[in-house]
Amino acid sequence: MTLRPDSAPSARIGMDTITLAGGLRAKLDAIRGAGFAQVMLSARDLVGHPEGEAAAIAAVRDSGLRVTGLQVLRDFEGLSAHLHNYKVDIARCMLELCARVGSRLLLACSSTSAHASDDPEAIARDLRKLAMLAIPFGIRIAYEALSWGRAINDYPTAWRVVDRADCPNLGLAIDSFHIFAAGTGLQALDTIDPDKVFLVQLSDFMWQQAGDFEQRKTTARTFRVFPGEGVHSDALAALVRRLEAIGYRGDYSFEVFNDDYQQMPPATVAARARASARWLIDDVMESPGGCRAGARAGAVSGGQ
Image 1 (cartoon, helix red, strand yellow):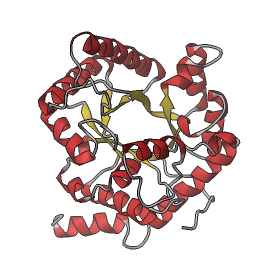
Image 2: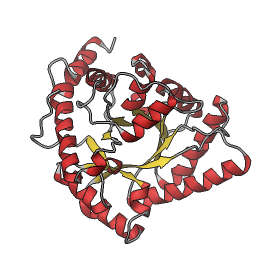
Image 3: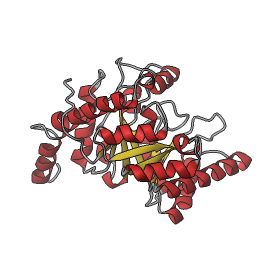
Protein backbone atom coordinates (compact mmCIF):
# COMPACT_ATOMS: atom_id res chain seq x y z
CA MET A 1 0.00 0.00 0.00
CA THR A 2 1.17 3.52 -0.78
CA LEU A 3 0.70 5.80 2.21
CA ARG A 4 0.55 9.50 1.41
CA PRO A 5 1.08 12.12 4.11
CA ASP A 6 -0.30 15.06 2.14
CA SER A 7 -3.43 16.99 3.22
CA ALA A 8 -5.44 16.71 6.40
CA PRO A 9 -7.37 13.59 7.40
CA SER A 10 -11.15 13.45 7.30
CA ALA A 11 -12.94 14.88 10.34
CA ARG A 12 -14.39 11.39 10.87
CA ILE A 13 -10.96 9.82 11.45
CA GLY A 14 -9.11 10.22 14.74
CA MET A 15 -6.31 8.78 16.82
CA ASP A 16 -6.19 7.08 20.20
CA THR A 17 -3.77 8.44 22.80
CA ILE A 18 -2.83 4.83 23.58
CA THR A 19 -0.98 4.78 20.25
CA LEU A 20 1.54 7.42 21.26
CA ALA A 21 4.38 7.63 23.79
CA GLY A 22 4.93 10.59 26.10
CA GLY A 23 2.72 12.79 28.21
CA LEU A 24 -0.81 13.78 27.41
CA ARG A 25 -0.01 17.27 26.12
CA ALA A 26 2.69 15.91 23.78
CA LYS A 27 0.22 13.33 22.47
CA LEU A 28 -2.48 15.94 21.89
CA ASP A 29 -0.03 18.30 20.17
CA ALA A 30 1.14 15.50 17.86
CA ILE A 31 -2.41 14.46 16.96
CA ARG A 32 -3.46 18.04 16.29
CA GLY A 33 -0.23 18.75 14.42
CA ALA A 34 -0.90 15.82 12.09
CA GLY A 35 -4.21 17.39 11.12
CA PHE A 36 -6.60 15.20 13.08
CA ALA A 37 -9.69 16.83 14.55
CA GLN A 38 -10.61 14.27 17.20
CA VAL A 39 -9.00 12.05 19.83
CA MET A 40 -9.95 8.85 21.65
CA LEU A 41 -8.76 9.18 25.23
CA SER A 42 -7.35 6.60 27.59
CA ALA A 43 -8.53 7.11 31.18
CA ARG A 44 -4.95 6.51 32.30
CA ASP A 45 -3.79 9.62 30.43
CA LEU A 46 -6.23 11.68 32.47
CA VAL A 47 -5.98 10.27 35.98
CA GLY A 48 -2.23 9.68 35.67
CA HIS A 49 -1.40 13.22 34.60
CA PRO A 50 1.48 14.56 36.73
CA GLU A 51 -0.39 17.81 37.39
CA GLY A 52 -3.65 16.09 38.21
CA GLU A 53 -6.89 15.27 36.47
CA ALA A 54 -8.06 18.88 36.22
CA ALA A 55 -4.90 19.83 34.34
CA ALA A 56 -5.38 16.87 32.00
CA ILE A 57 -8.95 17.90 31.23
CA ALA A 58 -7.81 21.47 30.62
CA ALA A 59 -5.16 20.20 28.19
CA VAL A 60 -7.80 18.27 26.25
CA ARG A 61 -10.03 21.31 26.04
CA ASP A 62 -7.15 23.60 25.07
CA SER A 63 -6.15 21.23 22.26
CA GLY A 64 -9.33 21.98 20.31
CA LEU A 65 -9.73 18.27 19.55
CA ARG A 66 -13.16 16.73 19.73
CA VAL A 67 -13.25 13.80 22.15
CA THR A 68 -14.27 10.65 20.28
CA GLY A 69 -14.71 8.67 23.48
CA LEU A 70 -13.06 7.36 26.63
CA GLN A 71 -11.66 3.90 27.15
CA VAL A 72 -11.91 1.40 28.66
CA LEU A 73 -14.30 -0.37 31.03
CA ARG A 74 -13.30 -4.03 31.30
CA ASP A 75 -14.96 -7.19 32.62
CA PHE A 76 -18.22 -5.52 33.58
CA GLU A 77 -20.85 -8.01 32.49
CA GLY A 78 -21.79 -11.45 33.80
CA LEU A 79 -20.61 -11.02 37.39
CA SER A 80 -22.65 -11.46 40.56
CA ALA A 81 -22.82 -10.37 44.19
CA HIS A 82 -19.82 -8.35 45.45
CA LEU A 83 -17.95 -8.60 42.12
CA HIS A 84 -20.90 -7.07 40.30
CA ASN A 85 -21.24 -4.29 42.87
CA TYR A 86 -17.52 -3.54 42.58
CA LYS A 87 -17.76 -3.20 38.81
CA VAL A 88 -20.82 -0.98 39.08
CA ASP A 89 -18.78 1.39 41.26
CA ILE A 90 -15.96 1.36 38.68
CA ALA A 91 -18.45 2.06 35.89
CA ARG A 92 -19.89 5.04 37.77
CA CYS A 93 -16.39 6.48 38.26
CA MET A 94 -15.61 6.11 34.56
CA LEU A 95 -18.91 7.67 33.53
CA GLU A 96 -18.23 10.64 35.79
CA LEU A 97 -14.77 11.01 34.24
CA CYS A 98 -16.35 10.78 30.78
CA ALA A 99 -18.70 13.62 31.63
CA ARG A 100 -15.95 15.82 33.10
CA VAL A 101 -13.73 15.52 30.02
CA GLY A 102 -16.61 16.15 27.63
CA SER A 103 -16.82 12.64 26.19
CA ARG A 104 -20.20 11.36 25.10
CA LEU A 105 -19.06 7.77 24.62
CA LEU A 106 -17.56 5.12 26.91
CA LEU A 107 -15.94 2.03 25.43
CA ALA A 108 -16.64 -1.26 27.24
CA CYS A 109 -14.89 -4.50 26.25
CA SER A 110 -16.37 -7.97 26.49
CA SER A 111 -15.41 -9.82 29.64
CA THR A 112 -12.43 -12.14 29.85
CA SER A 113 -13.08 -13.00 33.50
CA ALA A 114 -13.28 -16.65 34.52
CA HIS A 115 -15.80 -15.50 37.16
CA ALA A 116 -18.24 -14.15 34.59
CA SER A 117 -21.36 -15.96 33.40
CA ASP A 118 -21.64 -16.89 29.74
CA ASP A 119 -25.45 -16.67 29.84
CA PRO A 120 -26.53 -14.25 27.07
CA GLU A 121 -29.50 -13.05 29.13
CA ALA A 122 -27.26 -12.21 32.11
CA ILE A 123 -24.82 -10.39 29.84
CA ALA A 124 -27.63 -8.43 28.18
CA ARG A 125 -29.11 -7.58 31.59
CA ASP A 126 -25.79 -6.16 32.82
CA LEU A 127 -25.20 -4.18 29.63
CA ARG A 128 -28.71 -2.77 29.99
CA LYS A 129 -27.86 -1.72 33.54
CA LEU A 130 -24.62 -0.08 32.36
CA ALA A 131 -26.50 1.82 29.68
CA MET A 132 -29.08 2.98 32.22
CA LEU A 133 -26.30 4.23 34.50
CA ALA A 134 -24.99 6.27 31.55
CA ILE A 135 -28.29 7.94 30.62
CA PRO A 136 -28.17 10.74 33.25
CA PHE A 137 -24.75 11.73 31.90
CA GLY A 138 -25.92 11.77 28.28
CA ILE A 139 -23.30 9.12 27.48
CA ARG A 140 -23.49 6.21 25.03
CA ILE A 141 -21.92 2.80 25.68
CA ALA A 142 -19.98 1.18 22.82
CA TYR A 143 -19.60 -2.56 23.48
CA GLU A 144 -16.60 -4.21 21.84
CA ALA A 145 -16.05 -7.94 21.36
CA LEU A 146 -12.47 -8.86 22.27
CA SER A 147 -11.26 -11.74 20.12
CA TRP A 148 -10.23 -13.53 23.34
CA GLY A 149 -13.42 -12.73 25.25
CA ARG A 150 -14.80 -15.50 27.45
CA ALA A 151 -18.34 -15.61 26.05
CA ILE A 152 -18.41 -12.73 23.55
CA ASN A 153 -15.45 -12.86 21.17
CA ASP A 154 -16.84 -11.74 17.82
CA TYR A 155 -19.00 -8.87 16.69
CA PRO A 156 -22.04 -10.96 15.56
CA THR A 157 -22.37 -12.37 19.09
CA ALA A 158 -21.83 -8.92 20.58
CA TRP A 159 -24.60 -7.57 18.35
CA ARG A 160 -27.02 -10.24 19.54
CA VAL A 161 -26.59 -9.30 23.21
CA VAL A 162 -26.71 -5.56 22.42
CA ASP A 163 -29.91 -6.12 20.47
CA ARG A 164 -31.30 -8.21 23.33
CA ALA A 165 -30.45 -5.49 25.87
CA ASP A 166 -32.47 -3.02 23.75
CA CYS A 167 -31.28 0.33 25.09
CA PRO A 168 -31.06 3.42 22.85
CA ASN A 169 -27.66 4.45 24.24
CA LEU A 170 -26.10 0.97 23.97
CA GLY A 171 -24.40 0.04 20.71
CA LEU A 172 -21.42 -1.69 19.16
CA ALA A 173 -17.77 -0.84 18.78
CA ILE A 174 -16.38 -2.63 15.74
CA ASP A 175 -12.62 -3.32 15.89
CA SER A 176 -10.86 -4.46 12.72
CA PHE A 177 -8.06 -6.18 14.63
CA HIS A 178 -10.44 -8.51 16.43
CA ILE A 179 -12.30 -9.30 13.21
CA PHE A 180 -9.12 -10.29 11.38
CA ALA A 181 -7.55 -12.07 14.38
CA ALA A 182 -10.61 -14.23 14.89
CA GLY A 183 -11.22 -14.74 11.17
CA THR A 184 -14.78 -13.39 11.45
CA GLY A 185 -16.54 -12.76 8.15
CA LEU A 186 -18.13 -9.46 7.17
CA GLN A 187 -21.52 -10.84 6.11
CA ALA A 188 -23.10 -10.30 9.54
CA LEU A 189 -22.59 -6.54 9.18
CA ASP A 190 -25.59 -6.53 6.87
CA THR A 191 -27.82 -7.63 9.79
CA ILE A 192 -26.76 -4.76 12.07
CA ASP A 193 -28.58 -1.46 12.38
CA PRO A 194 -25.90 1.07 11.32
CA ASP A 195 -27.24 3.57 13.86
CA LYS A 196 -26.26 1.07 16.57
CA VAL A 197 -22.61 1.07 15.52
CA PHE A 198 -21.25 3.76 17.82
CA LEU A 199 -17.53 3.48 16.99
CA VAL A 200 -15.18 1.74 14.55
CA GLN A 201 -11.57 1.15 15.63
CA LEU A 202 -9.05 0.45 12.90
CA SER A 203 -5.65 -1.24 12.94
CA ASP A 204 -3.83 -4.04 11.16
CA PHE A 205 -1.02 -6.48 11.94
CA MET A 206 1.89 -8.09 10.12
CA TRP A 207 0.93 -11.76 9.82
CA GLN A 208 -2.03 -13.56 8.31
CA GLN A 209 -3.29 -15.32 11.42
CA ALA A 210 -3.16 -14.55 15.14
CA GLY A 211 -3.62 -18.14 16.32
CA ASP A 212 -4.98 -18.84 19.78
CA PHE A 213 -6.22 -16.41 22.41
CA GLU A 214 -2.75 -15.83 23.87
CA GLN A 215 -1.22 -14.96 20.51
CA ARG A 216 -4.12 -12.63 19.79
CA LYS A 217 -3.60 -10.82 23.10
CA THR A 218 0.14 -10.49 22.55
CA THR A 219 -0.28 -9.18 19.01
CA ALA A 220 -3.11 -6.85 19.99
CA ARG A 221 -1.14 -5.29 22.84
CA THR A 222 2.31 -5.03 21.29
CA PHE A 223 2.35 -5.15 17.47
CA ARG A 224 -0.62 -3.63 15.75
CA VAL A 225 0.11 -1.29 12.83
CA PHE A 226 -1.85 1.43 11.06
CA PRO A 227 -4.34 0.68 8.28
CA GLY A 228 -2.44 0.21 5.05
CA GLU A 229 0.75 -0.94 6.81
CA GLY A 230 -0.17 -4.57 7.50
CA VAL A 231 -1.09 -7.66 5.50
CA HIS A 232 -4.86 -7.25 5.85
CA SER A 233 -5.18 -4.03 3.85
CA ASP A 234 -7.63 -5.53 1.35
CA ALA A 235 -9.78 -6.95 4.14
CA LEU A 236 -9.67 -3.65 6.03
CA ALA A 237 -10.72 -1.78 2.90
CA ALA A 238 -13.58 -4.25 2.43
CA LEU A 239 -14.64 -3.73 6.06
CA VAL A 240 -14.79 0.06 5.73
CA ARG A 241 -16.60 -0.13 2.40
CA ARG A 242 -19.13 -2.56 3.85
CA LEU A 243 -19.76 -0.33 6.85
CA GLU A 244 -20.24 2.71 4.64
CA ALA A 245 -22.54 0.73 2.34
CA ILE A 246 -24.87 -0.25 5.19
CA GLY A 247 -25.09 3.41 6.22
CA TYR A 248 -22.48 3.87 8.93
CA ARG A 249 -21.58 7.54 9.20
CA GLY A 250 -19.83 7.60 12.57
CA ASP A 251 -16.22 7.94 13.66
CA TYR A 252 -13.17 5.85 12.85
CA SER A 253 -10.39 5.77 15.41
CA PHE A 254 -6.86 4.41 14.96
CA GLU A 255 -6.20 2.20 17.98
CA VAL A 256 -2.65 0.95 17.43
CA PHE A 257 -0.82 -0.70 20.31
CA ASN A 258 2.77 -1.07 19.13
CA ASP A 259 5.88 -1.39 21.30
CA ASP A 260 8.06 0.06 18.54
CA TYR A 261 5.88 3.16 18.27
CA GLN A 262 6.29 3.67 22.02
CA GLN A 263 9.99 4.29 21.36
CA MET A 264 9.39 6.90 18.66
CA PRO A 265 8.55 10.61 18.99
CA PRO A 266 4.78 11.18 19.06
CA ALA A 267 4.93 13.51 16.05
CA THR A 268 6.68 10.82 13.98
CA VAL A 269 4.03 8.23 14.80
CA ALA A 270 1.23 10.73 14.21
CA ALA A 271 2.69 11.43 10.76
CA ARG A 272 2.39 7.70 9.99
CA ALA A 273 -1.23 7.87 11.13
CA ARG A 274 -1.83 10.86 8.86
CA ALA A 275 -0.45 8.91 5.89
CA SER A 276 -2.68 5.99 6.84
CA ALA A 277 -5.72 8.27 6.98
CA ARG A 278 -4.94 9.58 3.51
CA TRP A 279 -4.75 6.01 2.20
CA LEU A 280 -8.07 5.23 3.84
CA ILE A 281 -9.74 8.29 2.35
CA ASP A 282 -8.20 8.29 -1.14
CA ASP A 283 -7.85 4.56 -1.86
CA VAL A 284 -10.79 3.20 0.11
CA MET A 285 -13.51 5.74 0.82
CA GLU A 286 -13.26 7.98 -2.26
CA SER A 287 -11.74 5.71 -4.89
CA PRO A 288 -13.72 4.67 -7.97
CA GLY A 289 -15.88 1.76 -6.89
CA GLY A 290 -15.19 2.59 -3.24
CA CYS A 291 -17.51 3.71 -0.47
CA ARG A 292 -19.11 6.65 -2.21
CA ALA A 293 -19.77 4.66 -5.39
CA GLY A 294 -21.08 1.75 -3.32
CA ALA A 295 -23.40 4.02 -1.37
CA ARG A 296 -24.73 5.55 -4.60
CA ALA A 297 -25.28 2.10 -6.10
CA GLY A 298 -27.15 0.99 -3.00
CA ALA A 299 -29.38 4.05 -3.18
CA VAL A 300 -30.18 3.45 -6.85
CA SER A 301 -30.88 -0.26 -6.41
CA GLY A 302 -32.79 0.12 -3.15
CA GLY A 303 -29.94 -1.54 -1.26
CA GLN A 304 -30.73 -5.01 -2.67
